[in-house]
Length: 486
Image (cartoon, rainbow, N blue to C red; front, side):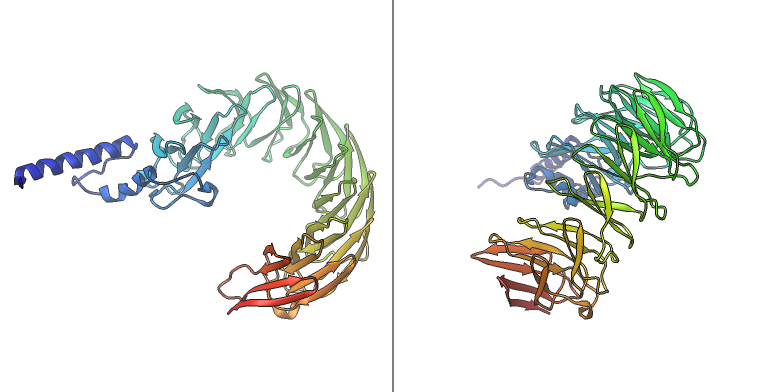
């Protein structure tokens, strides 16, 4: 058998080494400096991407092991292009990286900067990317595995909008970066030089409206075909915005003392409600009514449609959590401990006889139309509410965080608590039937998981190192504990 000479072995080793080096360069990685082999082992982790099967990877859960320094990700809506970046300025991970999931190859497509975390994807799939760093990294235009610097100044260009005809506008949130830019795939051009932190909302017919998130008296702007017009001059901070389904736009200020609500259409602004600032919690129902609320005490709810605003209830505040039924009935609760409202035919009624303390915001409607309302607060006996035709009833008085609802195939309805505070406040599982609640299991919490098989419903608690973990098998009103891990 032939034996290689020492020189042949050395030559082969050098050849193999250069092959590895070429492969690393092909990946877009930086070759280690100083000693010839310094850092090469760490780069092998990058090269693992060639051998991984990416078809079943959920990129929203983070970067797979092996991407040294690349700690954040954005996945394009096409399901193919994935972009990686570092938020920690790791030298070897600087720039912007791209991977085509079909090719399974990761490449550096832009070599400088870091924290390229603001991705705006246009209607045609083009990406505009900017960084949240102190350095003036500018703005990238990204298409597939190509990244082009189109604006070389500024940072924090995070407020971006696309109008109905494809124009892209953006603004920085920093006071050092003034004005508004128009973006194309080849350049960023300043079209307005005043103010900063402009926020945008697109209306119909190619109009975009903007208010600045700062205390300067800048009013409201209209943008159309790259022409910027100040259409409202009163005060500042017009940043609470909502675009209705019919294209109408509503805007309010976020500052106390800057009262009222603006109606924006076809490049004009009209004040349609003159009292109360910061209308900012919006919900639009199936009939096109837009409901609005504020965090100021007892400011109630505004109903707005086609530029006409009507106060439909004057009590309560912080109305943020809406549940709309198929028949158009709406229940809405606040984020604090105030009132609950029932809306039917655009008329609002306060719902009484229920517990509103404890952040009740979890609605569950059964197949036969029963509605239950659970809360998120733990540690007190907030109980469980039942709703019918705008009337409320507290049907279980013990425990809290009753929100893990489940309806079985045969129509049995159950709810488990997610309360983790203390068993003294009520735990376990309830069986619900109309406005009655029966406790069928009285231990365990974190009942987040359900499986139904062979006529049984299996309730499982969320794993926790410091809590008991259970599996309970339920049929009808019978609950049997079949697993307990201390």
